[in-house]
Length: 119
Image (tube, rainbow, N blue to C red):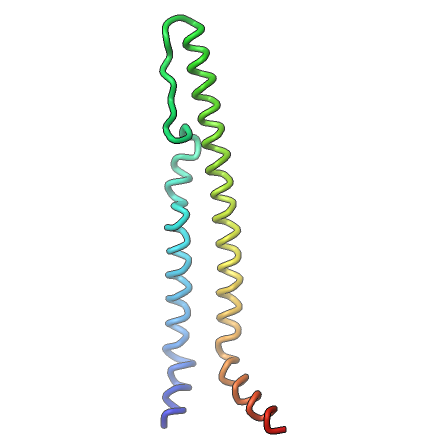
């Protein structure tokens, strides 16, 4: 009776658990990297470092250059974090796909290993 319940769970509710765990992991990864925040602030200055223009043309050009550099640094850093998030997402998707493929084979692998052990 126990084995029938186990097989029923494995091929029934177990699938739902695997899919919900995969969805939860992907959501957690998106929250860890704060992808929506990174995309909305992609061109924002780095750490909100802003230089206010001073008096005259020299002060305005210096502020423009400083702000431009700050935005470029912010863009590059956020772009690398987004690339790391993309690599992590691809890796997690591949691992989840392997988990979904291997899941139905695990009970069969246990039986096969028992048989192979006796041979």
